[in-house]
Length: 87
Image 1: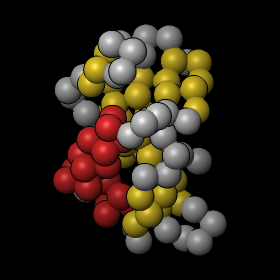
Image 2: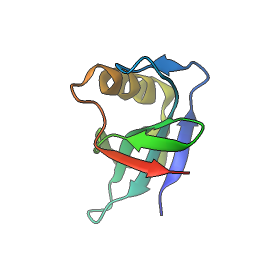
Image 3: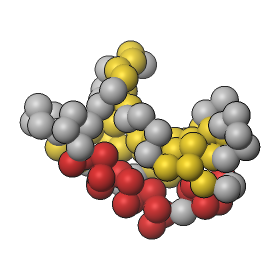
């Protein structure tokens, strides 16, 4: 089951001009590595990227510098979002 690794305090603005609350999430993959991705929360749902990183353990996946780096990269991707879900 996935879990929130880091909740970011700064909002990001998407290409649609909406503001999103990003959070880094992760889970253990079938190979035993931690897989990490970014979710962008809105008041009504969430958008998420594909896997952004694979790390040997939860601590590495949750490291603030690594999380901030893949959060920044995710907001610059075109298109940055691959899955949408309602809350």
